[in-house]
Length: 203
Image 1 (cartoon, rainbow, N blue to C red):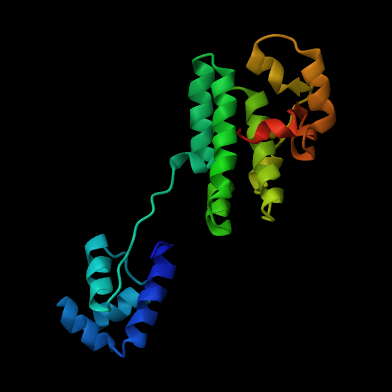
Image 2: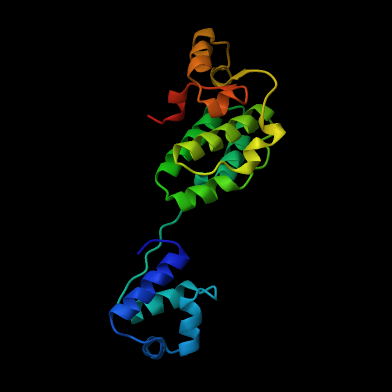
C-alpha cells in the first residue's frame, strides 16, 4: 500500500470494515482507545509511522513507503541548477531540468501539482529562471494541470532571445539555434527562451 497519508488511512479503514472490525476492536489490538483510532481514521492527528504500522497489522494489512525524489520538484531542481551554473556546467544544469520532467512522468497528478506549485528561488541568472518557468508551464500543459501562478511573474520572461544550446555548448551554434527557434515549445518561446522540444526528453 503506497499512497498519501489520507489515502492510506481511507484504505486501512476500508480494510477494518471489510474484516468486520469495530474501532473498539482495533483499539484493543493496538493497546489504545477507540477515540484515538477514530482520530487516526479521520486524519485529525499526525501519526507516527509506528502507529500506522500497528493499525495496519491490527486490520490485517501492510503499509509500504515510497520515497519521492527531491529532484521531482521545480524548487529542488532550481537549487541543483544554481549549483551547476556556479560550477560553470550549463550542460549539467540542463540535465537536471530534463531529469525533473522525467520524474514528473512517474508521479500522480496530485504529486505533479505539488512538485510545480511552489515558486523556486532565483538561480542567479534570469535566463535560467525563465527556462524553469517555461518548463513548469510546459509540464502543466503536458499533464493537463493548471499552470502555477508564479510562472507569470515578470522576472520569468526575457527581453532578448536566448538560445539555450549555445550556453550548453559554450559556443555559437547557428544551425542548432535555428532549429530551436522553429521547434521550441510555446511555453518557452513566449518567454524568449529557445530550446528544441526534443531536448526536453531524456535518451
